[in-house]
Image (cartoon, one colour):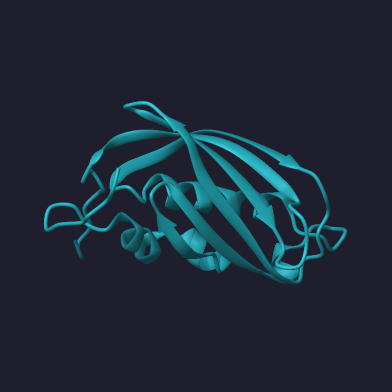
Amino acid sequence: MEHHPGPETPDLIELMRERDTFARKMGIKILEAANGCSKVSMPLDEGTANALGNVHGGAMFALADMALASAANSEGMVSVAIQANIHYMSACPSRGILFATAKKVSETRKLAYFHIEIFPPEGPVIATCQSMAYRVKPGAFPKTKEH
């Protein structure tokens, strides 16, 4: 399934970049998003640290959620998360940058299932997430004053 935005179907990834104020506040960037796959990044600092100085689980989950959102919406169908299960496998100091990749592994007419991996640039995968997205319908992105 390929996504070609037209006059009635806005580019969902661009709308996410513009409108997701939480992701912007966290510094999360969508680096790639196409064909049910994505790669996102988030800078790490004291604001993403837990009490031990490692990346907070909530920060990792936020990154995984944006990887899911960008992968699920990359095919032009408005999609929302309905399930997520994250596994934290290793601690990571809260400095530098963290990446997450998402890949669609199966889908039905209304549901899509994704596998997400979270990792620092120099290291192994530190968390994985399995998520499911509900496909609303093409072009159903909420309107705003600007759009």
